Amino acid sequence: MDKPRIFVAEARFYDDIADDLYASVEKEFEGKGYELKRYQVPGVFELAPAFSYAIRSMEIGAMGSRYVGFISLGCVIRGETTHYDVVVDETSRALMDLSVNHNLAHGFGMITAENREQALVRADREQKDVGGKAARACLQMIELKKELHLLPR
Image (tube, rainbow, N blue to C red; front, top):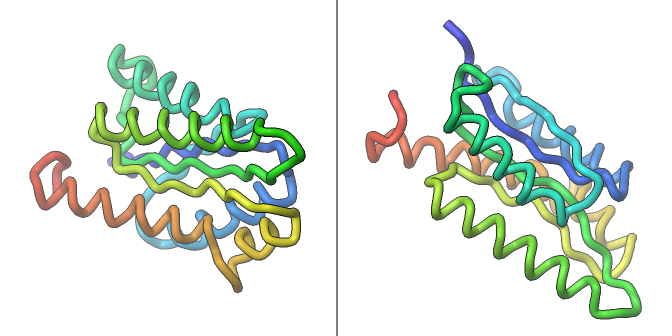
């Protein structure tokens, strides 16, 4: 029998931070019986479209088995303009809308930071561990869906 699959959309704008986030996700899922499917996008603004593509793929049966969980990973560091606010707000809202409207077990792992140093602390598994928190949230939401009979036990 195939392992249940987790869709992981990873924004690669800051490669080192993205690597730390994903490493934490992998660590959390070790030995839990899930298959992580990692998809990379250029930046956080592309996370919601990636989720939308995965949802559509499941609707038309293009990928065979379905994803039981979703994780979004990325980082936005504030700059000198309002671009940060637009990207953070729109990405967060779009991911929440997709999660609610499509009943996704979603772990949100988007770092929002004032500077690179803050972002590195948040990505580090030994410190804030945003990737690990996103993985644990996804797992908890999968369990909730099982309790509510939205997923098989």
